Length: 163
Image (cartoon, rainbow, N blue to C red; front, side):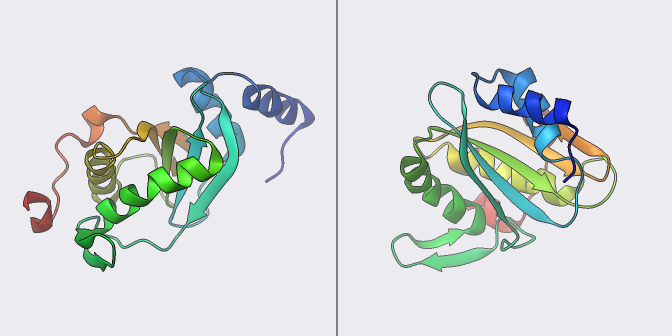
């Protein structure tokens, strides 16, 4: 990513201060300017609402959040529940209490069924942990936009969601 000096200064400033929703959005816009590929960014905030240095992109997740899997310690779970179950350990390791999810994919800013299903599944799954899901965003070709509970409230999910 290429940033102007002013953008880099602002990004550094935002990284040092508590992030309300508007500042969090601004920081993510500066950090993640446009989608390159399908992936999920795991971004962590501490109890003081400051962003962690630990920012984890991953592209190793299925298209369906309700895809069944078996974890040795959890037994049969969905993909979303498996990811959510691992977040307390990751948060503890990086000194965080809050999780921000950024769903990256090429295309326009309109929400698609896949990210809506994932957003709904993760919001539900993270509730069963002590980690606070602070926010979710969609990173698309032209930037980033918030993905709110109202956006994914009606998301249709697979049959495993009913289980």
